[in-house]
Length: 193
Image (tube, rainbow, N blue to C red; front, side):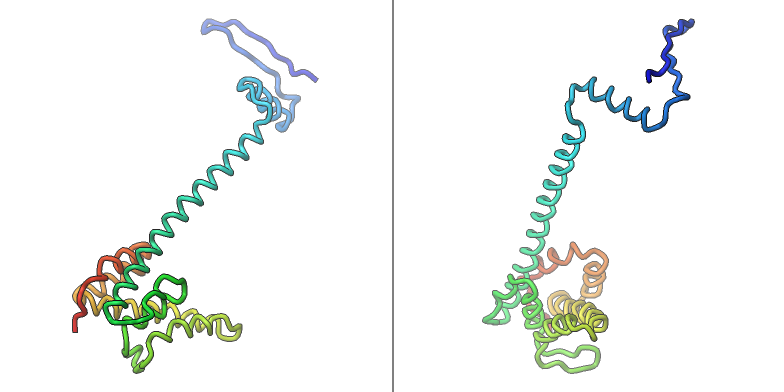
């Protein structure tokens, strides 16, 4: 089956007409795809596309991983330095995922969370993570973890920069990417009583 093709001469120049009324859309697309392959001298256009997509995904993943590593490192250095200034002998835990929550609580020390006096604040977030793994308390524990995490973060901000604590907390909630930078930049500030 060969589609009907014709050239017409007009005042504007040569005009190419093709009778496509008998062709199906898939046949038209196949024909266009083959013409493009011929024009570009490509043997397997789909294989080239897969390689390009794979390369793009790999590069994007690598860049995202580097950015996340830098953010994690900034946060860890900030928490480590604050814990070290408080004399915590386990300040190195700031560099270990999940254990950094222990360090965050250790920096705050004894505090009042939601009207409850908490003696060992460093255990609040780790215990909430453990309880969030239990099937019967998952939703409540995750909600409490979220609230407690930001409550302790607010306490850290209040210790270091009391006049801007609420603004920094709102920024940390709305734009979480700023939190590592904030913790890094306030790491050397003296605690305000």
